Image 1 (cartoon, rainbow, N blue to C red):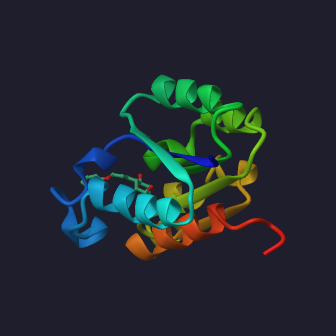
Image 2 (tube, rainbow, N blue to C red; image 1 turned 60 degrees about the horizontal axis):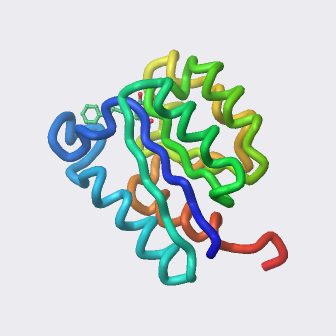
Length: 145
Ligand code: CA2
């Protein structure tokens, strides 16, 4: 069965509980459920992991090799500076989809660059739950469709 690794980085465990004016009221579980519902409805499995630790995320990306077909990643603030995550994603053989809840380009200048983006087939940002829905559809759609 085809499989998605859905990764969330630092502080995203706080979704729905802090800063609702920026990130809304949906929880991390809501985001995971959107991806899971769409993917499982199309016969895919989803393995999800959130960590506040860069090394945990890198280990998860390494272990995706040969086990998962697609990585969907919201690396949180690590998006903007973790060259280690950039390198780890480069060693993954399948497509990487970068997602963000907010639109980082409309925020502080330090959020305008992503070290994940050069390793991703696409970036979906600023659409909240809808962006995750699109990411799940893209992940589970064969390139010929
Ligand atoms: O918009 C996104 O999805 C971000 O990846 C979220 C990151 C931010 O650093 C990126 O620039 C854009 C931050 C996640 C922090 O999440 C919180 C949620 C609730 C309360 C506090 C932080």
